[in-house]
Amino acid sequence: MYSSRLITLVFLLLTLTLIALAQHQGHQMPKPTASPTPAATPSPSVSSAQTHRHSPGMDVPAASPSPEQMNTPTPMPSPSSSATGHMHGAGTGVDVGSLIVMEGGEMGIRVGSSDTNVISMGAMGSGTSWQPSSGPMHMHHWTKGDWLLMFHYNLFAGVNRQGGPRGVTKFESTSWFMPMAYHKLGKGTLQLRGMFSAEPFTVSPGGSPLLFQTGETYKGQPLIDHQHPHDLFMELSAQYTLPLGEHGTWFTYFGYPGEPALGPVTVLHRLSASENPSATLAHHLQDSTHISFGVLTTGFTYRWFKLEGSIFNGREPDENRYNFDAHKWNSRSARLWFMPNNNWAFQVSHGFLRSPENQEPDVDIRRTTASVQYNKPFNRGNWASAFVWGRNHASKPGETRNLNGYTAESTVQFLDKNYVYTRLELVDKDELLRPSDRLLLGITEDHPSFRIGAYTFGGVRDVWTTDRVQLGIGSDLTFYSKPSLLDTIYGNHPISWKVFFRIRPGRMDMSMHGMHGTNGNTNNTVH
Image 1 (cartoon, rainbow, N blue to C red):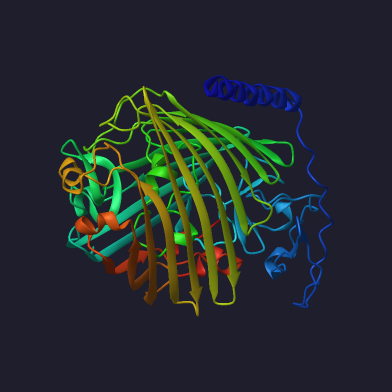
Image 2: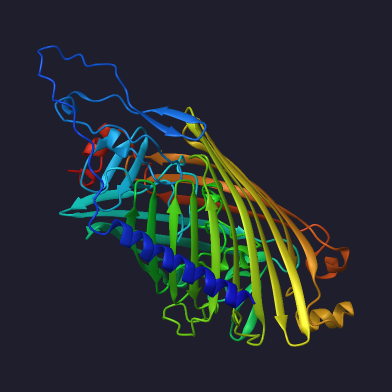
């Protein structure tokens, strides 16, 4: 029944696309008439008149025009606008290139030649996901001819100590690197994106120690108390977006590997987890499909909403972290986003994963997730929070299991260089015990389930900050709750800790001063 519903949904999406394209064929939105150019005067003073971007519950003044803009005709603002990653009426802001549009403190990518349809860079999460567009961005950018190029990365390295009898201590490094490119193609905009990780070289093949973590395998055995390393190739994707009128878009995304429309923004890209080097224990209940070798997604955005669906390969990556996996694209998902303004993002999604685990090929999973993300900038700081719920309904002939995972996390930046963060989790785990453990505890079930709590508190201090790079030093502590039955294996009160450094690009300067290459990066000039 679910398959038929999803097929109906995808068919409806494609039908609406064809109708919309047919209605817009040969019809081009008239561009607003430019106001007459005022005569130059010897006085350097300018008018105090400002344009506004109207969003639900918001009225944000645009940046005052700089002297060099005063002799440039400016289109009239669109009567309606959206904060869902589309800065409609962006022609009222500062256009610093054929692709980049600046409005107030936000940066956007123009969709085709539209004067009113712009994709907010701040709202772009992993895959095709959204997150609050008011958050900070850390990346480098260049223009090369008709292409806009960007580069983002994040690297953690340090000492990882996991407590209790099952804990170990290791020095390790986790990382990812993400180049992006944008180009106007036909009536739309093309996005190319790659994501790579050095973890196959810097993390043990058996994974990074992480107490109570499960998921994937090593040497044919399930990984327990370890987080698997990410693949060298995490994403190689292309997305093409077309404007539909003044307030909508239609997009198609292909990735091999890529991320389907299922779950929240992956933990690697969530603003609320930006300083935390650890994966969530609920990873395989919420966002584990962020590396899927074969994804095709299509969908629409309209004002505050995005509706999208995917077909993809639902099998987890294998133990070879350097290759490209090949499996049937027999999994599917659908997701709905709602962004009422640039500080909030909500999503709900459901997916069917056909045989996701190598060890249990006869088990299918129906995953449902919901999430709320909030971001609030303030003077010399930022506050980002998220709540994520994920549920796996695993089934095979004669057996069903239900697992839930709840994650609440928050990161506060204050006085520019200081960060404090927390993550609170309650997760159902049914793969913690090996056969020898079940024998020791007198358990006869193959998959006994336990509710695990993990509570992390940490902080980071930026010790070296330039326009090109930020270097921070941090540490955190994690406490746990668990059934007393597990004390024999995990100890009564295990405590884990990490001491690490973090390297990433400097925060992007979203002012016109910064966008014209005065931020210390000579390659950042936008023409």
